[in-house]
Image 1 (tube, one colour):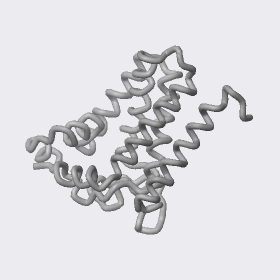
Image 2 (cartoon, rainbow, N blue to C red; image 1 turned 90 degrees about the horizontal axis):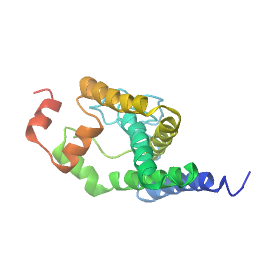
Image 3 (cartoon, rainbow, N blue to C red; image 1 turned 180 degrees about the vertical axis):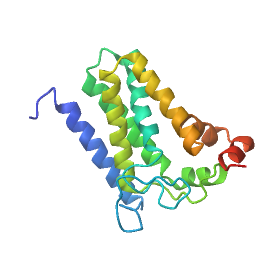
Image 4 (cartoon, rainbow, N blue to C red; image 1 turned 90 degrees about the vertical axis):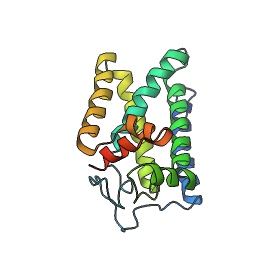
Length: 187
């Protein structure tokens, strides 16, 4: 069970647990302040967004896994899959910690329509990391064309349904545009 080949997978589990502990130590709520955990929360303009197991931003974390798999295949394909998964998990866990820092939360609130965003609950962050892991595995098993279709499809779906997605989220965080913000607000 604890073999040399299994070691990176145990490290993945340890990184996820460490991220959860760091988020708890930073004051993040373990679960939604509403007192319960939903499998899915579909309202984006809600104080419960990013508080439950999955929401409209879960697909972006699945896409992180597909993108990380492709990038690590390009630059580190000689590493075994488990080690590449560990690298991707460290990156995703680091992002969850940074994303839930006061500075980034305030940035989201000031440049996007996410006025009610107060950061992710710990359970949501862990679920987001697990969605990335799922995307990483999917990219391993699926043909490249299907992985690309999933990325494009989820981006189109979330842009169409919630006027947001991975690309828009990154754009608005790094280079906020009033026209995009107005469009996202439905103006």
